[in-house]
Image (cartoon, rainbow, N blue to C red):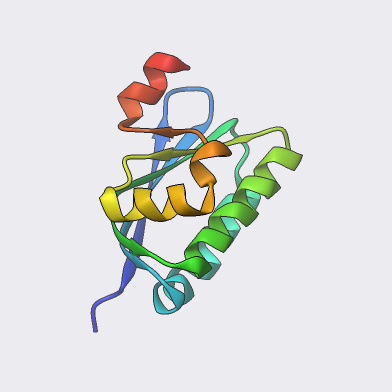
Length: 117
């Protein structure tokens, strides 16, 4: 059976920043598939900027939004940042509707983030 949500991790530069690429649907079933792996990664993250690349994220629901906000809060309390990259129109509409775009920086691409850093 194919996974609903897959992750890949990539180091960005020498500062310890990391990119987590999401591919699939971030709903209850998708979150269940990646919960342990992503939770451990976020808890162990030692860099400054944790970048969630959402270019291949097809869908997100309230469970996914709640998780992103808990990651944001966790990082802020550790003096770190969550950066969101490239959400599609559906995901961007959801983020806009719940106000995430006013709290978490969102860029079109990793290069856009690097250029504005």
